[in-house]
Length: 133
Image 1 (spheres, rainbow, N blue to C red):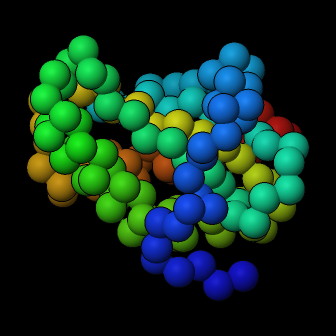
Image 2 (cartoon, rainbow, N blue to C red):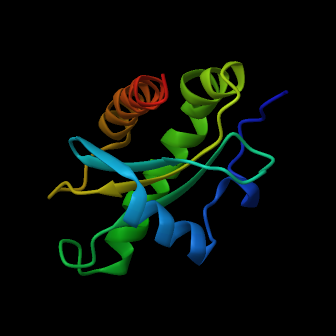
């Protein structure tokens, strides 16, 4: 399966049923400034992973700030998903849904967000394969 470096509609988690299941049954862990919640999906989907990205309105009152952080996270995810997440999921034939919640207090620059997201995706793969073995 050839993975393009895009962030398409199929990769976004929009289903309210799946979101409810994710936050009630899913496992979570912290890699500052992110909290990742994940769940192995039992539904047929075209992409190995579906993701939702959230930023707290309580910590960042201005929508401009929330949207800036979400754009940076989406870009970092788009650049790193194929090598850090999709290859392992494809090899092990797993499909997951997960959320990335930004819990930091400050707006970080893109390089820091990118490095931290790489660490979070590596930790996510470890969590998935330890839990399912």
